Length: 355
Image (tube, rainbow, N blue to C red):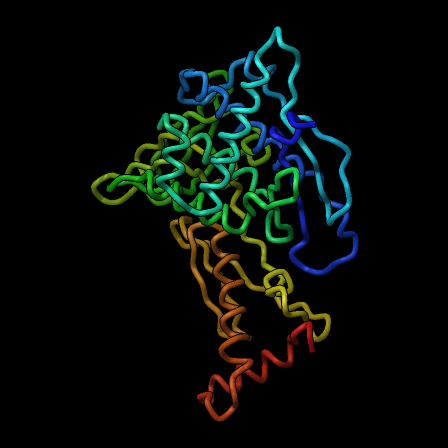
């Protein structure tokens, strides 16, 4: 059916590492992807119709009813979830509206795939919608974690965008929206929340300052799960003259702080596997002011720092890939003594899948 083809979005999940049960998927990964795509479609529909977006980017009831994302029966391949924007009859809206919303959404995803900020701004013409759309796509792609890749495909199976390029592009878009004297992430203790006003209060460890901000509805479950714990707030963080956070606006995401050690197996590039079962883990801790993650693996001489756990994982994955390509594969006579010892350790722990 032409209508379904024009409003179709296929969600294709693939495990990043070879494992059994590749046609199964954790429910949370699917939920994050569907909710992120649905909210993006709703925001695009509001923008197309010239609706005003408030601070919390609340979607109106009629938009929710008119532009519903429907799921077809999942198919194997690793895990494939067909979806489409469903029409509910001409009395509610024109079929042309769904086609146009779907096309704008595709254009939006293409701009993310290419990392093209200019095309993104041309597609999201109303600047008030840019932050909530970046946040909804961040939830969609960033929610897949380190174990799965998500590609969005058209009806013919052509990839529109995949999670690797999407997460990088979305982070660049977040950063480009910040002006001098601002930051994008702050960590603090979740102090209290006003559910009626959608307002949370955050205690900043380094200053003891209590700052408040408004949040969007979809952030509420994270707040409930992490009451009184350290959380990271992603948004526009205004800094005082000493460089300390003093105001938060444009809240996009809230994440729990996680300092659990990371299993080295989770960080290996696709072409590597462990020689044998081991319990090698990368230790993770926070800086004294709680604003920075630090990772350390003495066995391989790895040390990294990042503002978020996901960025930390990305840098660790890149480091292991670099070490294997530039140390483990290098000829012995071209390596310094310390690098030669590292090569021996790398070869002891890992091997290429093709070997």
